[in-house]
Image (spheres, rainbow, N blue to C red):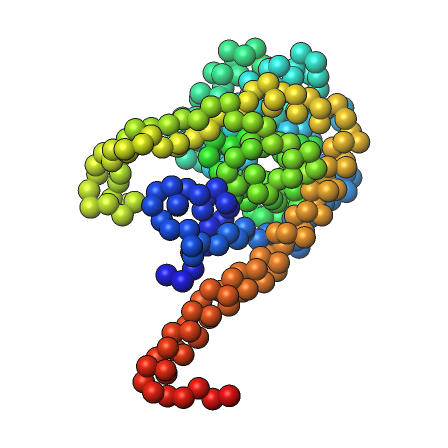
Length: 300
């Protein structure tokens, strides 16, 4: 193939780790629609209604994490961080936007137990499982004060980009897709990896392209997940909760960064240029070699 596209440098490095040559792999992020995801005013009716529905008081700050299941987005690490934050800044609500699934249900039980064990009040943590169309999702992102997703494994991080587009500072992890999309201390914070989950073997399934269900052994242990540093998460969260000016400045920088780099039109142009460089150039070269090989002279 003349071109393989990876959504982040981390995805490219993972392909190369698994034996794919990197010569024809280019990196291109995913675009968002700026007509949908953009900063709303604080008094926007949809934003205000969502905050009211979620029980966020005027003097409270709302932290949001969204995903199919929020565990993969680092929700359990955030709960541990919030247990530390709560002692110094108790005026917060943590909203977890999930999609109905067995995974979300199972992990949800884990998170509720974890919150209880940490001594966090149930009223401070809200789960949303309803279907949100893009417009409502944009309103939800605008309703939060901080978007947090110190993901355990993230190849790109679409919602993080959309949250930045809505003018929200991001708290994420310094590995994977977020390392490309979030500018540390400018559009948010990237906390360090506390440890990696490495496996010596893993189940392979037919839906992955294998003939049958089987265990694949790895000659060298492979990283399958990461865990964010809890103390750093707590420090970054507390800093953003306490400092209104910092949140606003980072949010404005985030919106500008998203628009300049991830507007779908920007991404489309980048993809076009990659294809022209890799695919069109190769096809043109092959055609030229065929003409030369067949004795056809090139026209000036």
